[in-house]
Image (cartoon, rainbow, N blue to C red; front, side, top):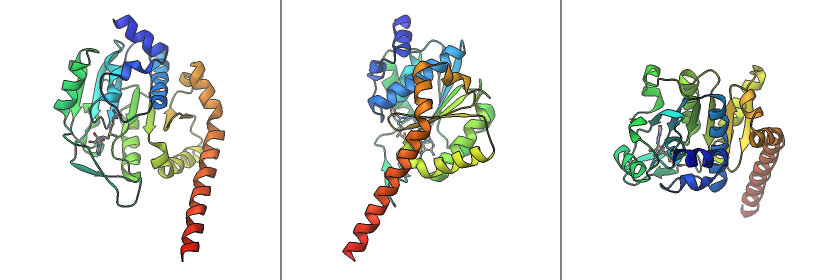
Length: 250
Ligand SMILES: C[S@@+](CC[C@H](N)C(=O)[O-])C[C@H]1O[C@@H](n2cnc3c(N)ncnc32)[C@H](O)[C@@H]1O
C-alpha cells in the first residue's frame, strides 16, 4: 500500500487526491505532486506546512507519503473571510472545522492522522517554535488577500528549512502582491528559483537545485518568464477592455 502511494506521487497520479474534496483543479494537483516528488527526492524525510486546509483535500498526498513525518495545518476556521477576487467579496466555508477535516482524512485511509497538528490560528498569531521540525514545503491557500498572502509568506520564511519551497495557490487572484514580491526579490538579486505551475500556482524554491533535478519542474521553470509575461499581457488587455466598455456606457 505504502509503495503504491509513493509510486502515485512519483508518477504524478492525481487519483491520490480522490478521498477528500479539494478546491484545486487536476492541473494544480499534478503540479503539487511534482513539487512533493522533487522535495522528497532531495530529503529522506520532511515536514509539510499548509496555510488554509478546509476539508483537508490538499493534505492527502502528504498523509499518504511515509517520508512526510509531520503535517502542520494552520487554519483559524473563520465563519467568513475577505477575498481579493472581487471588491467586497467574502468567502464562506460551511461547517469548517479541524475535527471534520480529521474525520474525512481518517476515512480516506491514507495514513496515520496523528501526524497532523491542527493550529486554529492566523500565521501572525503563531509562535515560530510551534512549527518544528522545520517544514520543507509550505502551501499557502488561506485568506486570499494581498495583506494575508504577504504575511503568510514572511511567516513561512521564518519557519521553513532554508532550502525549502513555498507554493502559492490562486495566482490569478493574488498576482498583484505576488508580482510586487517578485520585483523586490529581483532587485535584491535573491538566488531563488521561481516557477509558475499549472493551473494556478506559483512556487518559490529557496534551493534552485530542487526544481532543476526534476524533469517536469525544470521544463516549467524554463517556461516561467514567458508565462508570467503572457499573464501580464492578458490581464492588461482585460482591464483595458473593461475601461473601454465602461467609457462606452457613459
Ligand atoms: C480555499 S480553502 C483551502 C482549501 C484546501 N487547501 C484544499 O484545496 O483542499 C481556504 C481555507 O483557508 C482558511 N482560512 C481563512 N482565513 C485564514 C487565515 N487567515 N489563515 C489560514 N487559513 C485561513 C479557511 O478557513 C479555509 O478553510
